[in-house]
Length: 153
Image (tube, rainbow, N blue to C red):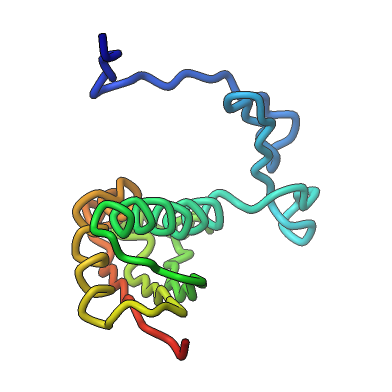
């Protein structure tokens, strides 16, 4: 008998906050540290919250992109992802409330692959449907552009 996979799960954790800048978050068997750089009063033991959000978007694009490529029978080859993000820091600087903290993000997914540009574009279209972190940014009003690019093979 096949095991049923739950479609909706609940994540729980209890984070420790040893300083105003550092948060220690147990996730599975990992100890994730989110911190501020020294110049902002942190200890630089991990990325800042906004950097963590960007890292999550890049990682989600990689994971979901590869899942879709596999499902479609497309070899992505060697992948690198370039990210360019605009962050309106007035909110985190406590100057004023900002409705869209990340007004614009552009990712370029570079694939050194035998696949065609058309196949990569298809992977990108499918990935946009399923990447949870991309959906979060878009729902928040971010102008998110993800370009899937065939590089020299």
